Image (cartoon, rainbow, N blue to C red; front, side):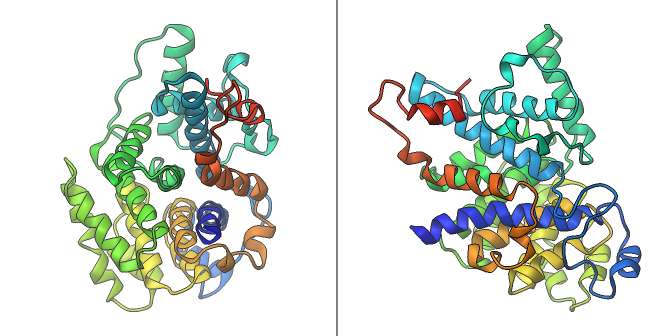
Length: 365
C-alpha cells in the first residue's frame, strides 16, 4: 500500500518536474536548446525569463485544480449524497481562471488550494482554456449564452488530467468509467473528439501503470482500449508512428521533430511524444530529458512524461536532487496526491459525512 501511495505522489510530482523542466524551453527550437544547453539539451531546472527556478506552468496549475475538482466532488457526495464531477470541476477551473486575472464572484473563491498565492502567476495559459472558461464564467455568473463548442484538440486537456487516473485507482473505478470522466473534464474546454480520446487514453495508461502493469503492457492496454472508443481513428493513426520512432535510433530530438507530428501542440501528439520518451528511456531523469528536448510544447510533453514515469518508477526515482527540492509548490502537489490516495478513507460517522476539516479544505460546492 505504501508503494502505491508513493506512486501516486511520484505521478503528480513527476508531472510537475517535467513541466518545470520543459517550461524553460517551451517556445524554443531544438537547435536553440542545443546552443543554450549543449548536445544533450536541458537536463536540470533553470530560472528563466518566465519563471523562477523550478517554476511550474499553467499545466501543473490546472492539474492541481483538476485534483481539487475531483476531491470536492467526492466530499459533496459524502455530505450531500449527490454530486457531479464535471459540474464541481467546472467551478475548480473557474477558480484557476480567477488566478489568471479574471473576476469571479467571491463566494466561489473558497477552499484550501486557492490560498496559495504562487498559483496566481500567469504562466503562458492556453488561449483555448481561457476562452472556453471565459464563456463558462459568463454563463454561470452573468446569465450569458451557453459556451460555444470549439473544435480545438489542443493539449490543454491531456496535460491536466493525471488526477483522474489517481482518483480512479483509489476508488476502484472501472477503466470505462475513468475514461468517461476524463472525456467529461476534457470537454469543459475542448470539443474535438481526438482530444477526448487522447485524454481517456492517457488516464487509462496511468491507471494501468499504477495497477502494476509493465511499460509495454500498459501501452498495449491503452491502445486496445482507445481503439474501442468512438472517433478514435485519428488517434490510432497518430500512434502508428510510435514503434518506428522507437526503432529509429537514439537521436531523440531529431526523431521527435521529424517523426512524431507537430511538436506536441495538439493532444494526441503531446501524448505520443510523452509515451515515446517513457518507452525509450529506462530511468526517470532520461525520460524527462527526452520528453522536453524538441522543437515544441516542451512543458506539456514533459508534464505527461513525468506523470507516466512517476506512476511507474515511484517516489524513490525522483526524490533525490532538485526534482522535488526546487519544484514550485512541490509540497502542495505532494499533499494533493496524498489526499487523492487517502480519500476513500474520509467517510466519517460525524454529521458532516467527512471530517469537518476536510470539508473546509475541499468544500463540495
